[in-house]
Image (tube, rainbow, N blue to C red; front, side, top):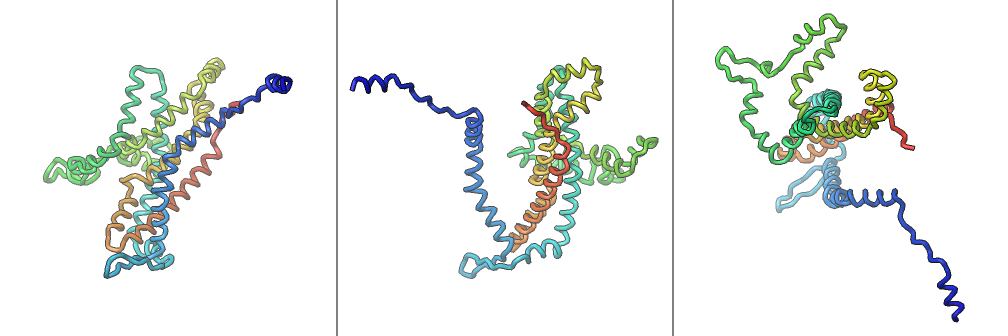
Length: 324
């Protein structure tokens, strides 16, 4: 008996298994997204299923109260596309504006992120200033701004001047395509590019308001680049222009992909989106909730297709740095 006890005491203790660092990070990530996953499954997912169901049905209100769903197939989708001409027109203009906004916002946010990443006095204050519009465009402040009568008056066709001095909407434009044509007179620049630049300059207020998050993402990507790489370029005699296109731009190309997709989604869910506003108007009409559901899913499919095209095109040019 004593020999058996001594043998147990002499036997080496089994090592306790510990989770690897990757498993710990994965577990922490799931804990971090758990509230969103629960909220999506419990609250949001049933609404999505109801929206799909309503888009294929008609609602018949009963005399005694309540309603009955009658399956009509693709009737609501056909009415949204082939009957409601305003929806198709609004959808087309909204998609065009979305395609216009993506490069303008991404280029502007990248340009400002490169400037704000430089060492200068008050750099943190400038970063905060450019992110302030993101805060002001959310929550209660956005509702107050939506009811701002002075802002509506300033952006309307009427100006402060009266009588013959009143002008049309062109008074709110900073520059026109005609002004840029004089600037690019001696350059081989097409009229489409001139009109695009003029539209971007005149829409600079909206572009700045929607570039805050993208700017922070670009700043995070720029700060993740090792300073040793820039020192090597400087020793080799590379210019600032060459360093940007050979080092900075490829290193932050994954951020360009992320920001492009984020911009599409942000434009899709924006309260100022013309398509979203029109769908809300149709929903408020009598019996328009099923038509609005069909319109929403048509718009959703189109935006998903745009996201897929953007991801497929930009992914071919994304550079991922190897860490090993």
